[in-house]
Image 1 (cartoon, rainbow, N blue to C red):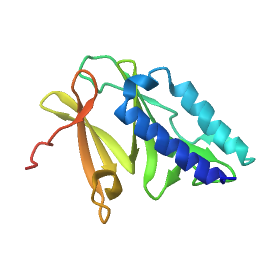
Image 2: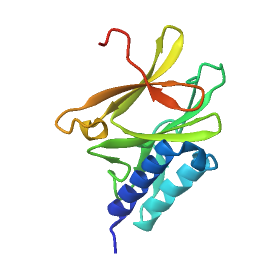
Image 3: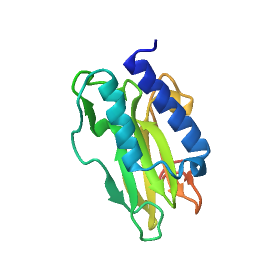
Length: 156
């Protein structure tokens, strides 16, 4: 039987892969579903789940002046497995925009403004961008249907 950590790693990998590639499939998956799954993963191992910071933030990421929901699993905590939601590759970061769910594995993230457009900047493990020996920075902008990579100002 797979251990609790292996189950969560598989869950996170499957969610990230399917939702990033096919975000419309997961439009019914919402913040409450995410919290319920995280709670269940913790309880399976006999732990108590909590959120050690904001459970989600409302940020404007699409340029349409409506707020999108952003949740970072780095804020999740399980009493008997402190690293359940954050591993060496980072934690899952989730965005709900235009009725779709997007997810990425990140060490950190921030939102910047580039020529009036919100840019989601992901600081990721190198394995996420084909550079396993070093980390990488990925800049994403809303293209009307999804978040697409864009060059950052000042980059070549």
